[in-house]
Amino acid sequence: MKPETLNFFDKVYQVARQIPYGRVTSYGAIAKYLGAPRSARMVGYAMNNSSGKDVPAHRVVNRKGLLTGKHHFDGTNLMQQLLESEGVTVVNNQIQDFENLFWDPASL
Image (cartoon, rainbow, N blue to C red; front, side, top):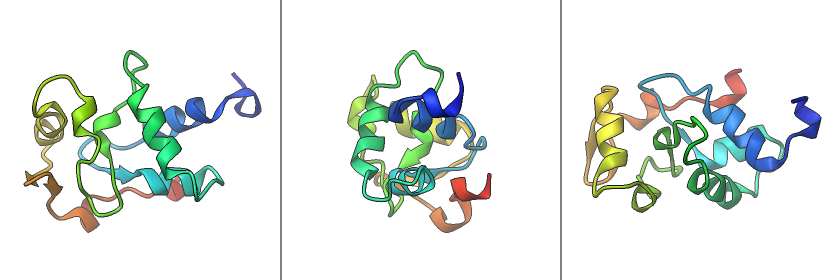
């Protein structure tokens, strides 16, 4: 699909698929990259609807590194487990060393 024919959710998925293994980004960073800086919540909705679309939604967190979307994953701690399997340390739903693990989509 050509980028101009993609809907917002599809554009979010395109960006999310590029988040490197072991790194994280925020809903707001994706929204800003897509030219819709006030649409972080819409990015969250996209992540909630990404099941079965081969999107690493576990790598998208809030601007403070909190796992605010974890209740949308099957299982009690699946989001945390997926991140930890990539070497990301999570304590009390907070990504540790968030500044160094943060990936900015603008770096594409």
